[in-house]
Length: 392
Image (cartoon, rainbow, N blue to C red):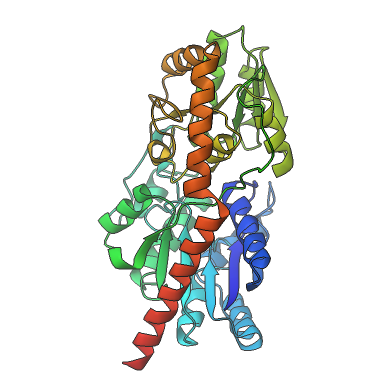
């Protein structure tokens, strides 16, 4: 089987970019013939002409459609596996694949198909106003805090829905959690074409000394929906504990100014450095205030036998089993977060039990073997559905 992965990278490197890299590496190590079509993300402060080009290409890119047509003719893949398509590639590449008879599998890493900005979060709160075909709210409420970008996001979402650019051209959708699948089905997507395939995590095989470090670790993009401001407030309540935060994003400067002395920012770190960060930690925190579609950083911590304290929002409750692999706290409630961290800090036996349970779940549910099996099953289903449709 020959696979073509398609992905437009993000301005700030995050979990989706990491998953694409991990998937590419996994398929190659399993001797699958796989290649990657990718476009870079926009720079931090793009020029006005660059913004207008992104605006136009995000709606429908004829250049990307021509590029995809050439690749299909040259490489003749059996499956095209799409990830993020914005802003440079656009859903135009999906239409080319359908016309060429090539099955398309699309991983829904976020809520982009039903929320123009993909996160169901705007102006400091969970927002679902655009659900049900009301993408215009993104422009009306200026969800990107940038009028041009908000209008562009709203318009490209409406165009994709009006012309069925996803529904008509994607053979199978991959939801990264049951939570994401429920959202898609509620919006009218065919449940039989939405398959749940949780994200894959790299689980270390080395012997660990879990949950015995001297700090609390957090790996997150520094954006409003990730709730790092909540963690900062909790850290202020716990001056006796050290906190280390890895990641970058638009709130970096603000969070640095607000953080107490017991918080250290590490900036963007490589995957190997994330593993080292967890190996030296006593606890891991996922303080999201937005609707998480999965929770890869929680799984990565669990793989290191580190208990996770996570907000009970989105799919995090599917990943972190309350009282078994970690604890859940009320999203946005820094007092509750501080209480849960304090409850585990001095309880070594409980931490170790949770760490062992977390690692067992990470290997069982999110390891490479099970992910590869699930992914290949979706590829085969997409290939079969396309063949049946062609035969009609």
